[in-house]
Length: 525
Image 1 (spheres, rainbow, N blue to C red):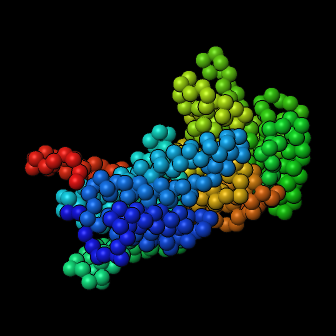
Image 2 (image 1 turned 180 degrees about the vertical axis):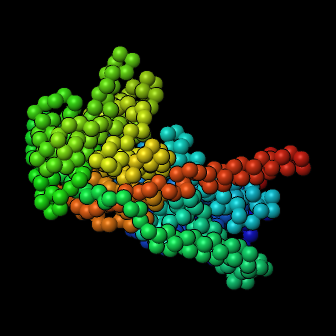
Image 3 (image 1 turned 135 degrees about the vertical axis):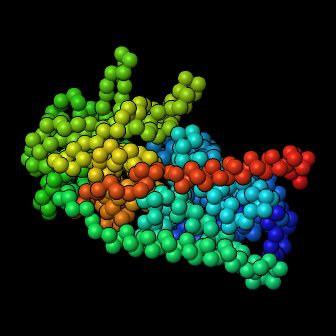
C-alpha cells in the first residue's frame, strides 16, 4: 500500500511534491533554536506526508532527501562561518562543503521515507513504520563516519521538561518517535476530514494519546522525585570571551590570563566556590611545560582555595612520537595537579584530517586550527569528593560519551567548549539544547563553560538555570547536586533506537523476500 490521500490545488506533477517537501524542511528548521518554534515539530512533516501520496519508494526517498536537505541547509548555515572566517576558505569552497554535509544528513531523512513506503507495501500502517524508520535512520547517523547526531527532532523539545524526562529511558530517540507519530496521526486526521474515504485513524490516535499521556505522566513523576542527598557542589563558571583571532597569539597570552584570573576572583567574591571552570583551551599554551604562565594558574588556585578545571593542549609520547591532545586539567586548592582528561571524539577536518595521507591538500585548510589525536580512556577527575566527567566541546552531543563518564563514576558532568567558531549564529543555542539531554539521560547535572557563550548550569532534570549572553565577559555561580547514577539509560543505552533499527531492517528484508517470491519487477515505477 502506498500513500493515498486528499488533494491540494494542483501545481504540476513534479513541482507540487517537491514544494511540499521543501515546506516540511523549512518548518523543521524553524522548530530548532534559534527560531525555537518548537511546536512546529509536531506538524512539520504534514507537507512531506502529503507529498508522498501515491509515490513509489524511490520517489519517497528523493522527497525525504529534499526535506532533509532544506532543513539542514537552514540549520547548518553556520558551517560557512566556521570554514570561511576561521578556516579561511573562500565561498566557492565553503558553500559546496556546507551543502555536502547537509546532503549527508539529508540521506537519513530519505532512508526513513523510503523504508516507510516499503513497510506500507507489506500492509503496515504509517503510524507504526514511520516512527520506527525515522528513529532507526537517526541512530545510524549517530555513528556512521564518526557520527554527527546534531539536531534530531527530539532536541526541539528541550524546554518542555515534563515531555522529555523519558529520555532517561529511551534517549532523545523516544521523543523523536513521539513527534513523528504525532505528525502521522495529525496527517491521517486531516485526511479523514477532507472528504476522502479513509476512515478516522482511531487506533493510531488512541496509541498516540496513550503514549503522550504515559510520557507526560512519567515526566511529572521524575520532576517531583526527590534529589540525591549528596552535598552540593558550588561552581563558578568563567566566560572569558577571548577573540578567536588572537586566542593563540603568544603576545596575547598574559592578557588572556589577566581576564580569566580577574573573572575568577570576581566569581569567588560573589560566592565561595568548590570548583572553578574555565572553557576549552582557556590556557592557550602547553600547561605541562611548567612555564611562568602555568605558575600563574597554580597560584590562582591556591589563592582562591578552590579546584580549578581548565582546557589546555597537552602532549604525550605514543609509539616514540609526541602526540598533541585537546585536554582538560584539574588543579586542587593547593595548586597541585590532580589529573588530566583528553578529548576522545575529535572534530573531523577541525582537529584532525581523516585519511590525511590520501588528502594532503585538506591538511592545509585546517592548518592552525589543530592536529590532535584522540584520548584513550574515560578519566573522571575528582574535585574533593565529587567525581567530574569532562566533555570537551562537541563531545556533549554524543550521548554514549556522557553515559560512559557517568558509568565510570562521574557524578557531575562538565562541558568546556569554545563556540567562538560559530559566531553569532544559531549554533551555540543548538549546542546547548543537546547538552540538556545529556543531563536527563544520565540524571547527572551538567555545568558548561564556553569561551564566548553560552555558559550555563543544567540540573539533572534538564532545567537550564541561566544562560549568559554571547560574546561578553561573564561569570555564573551556583550549586549543583551531584547525581546518583540511577537512570535506566545508563544500563540499557540506546536499546530503544537499536530495537527500532532492527525492526525496520527486518521489515525491509521481509519486503525483499516477498518481492522475490512474487517475481515483482526490481525497478521502481
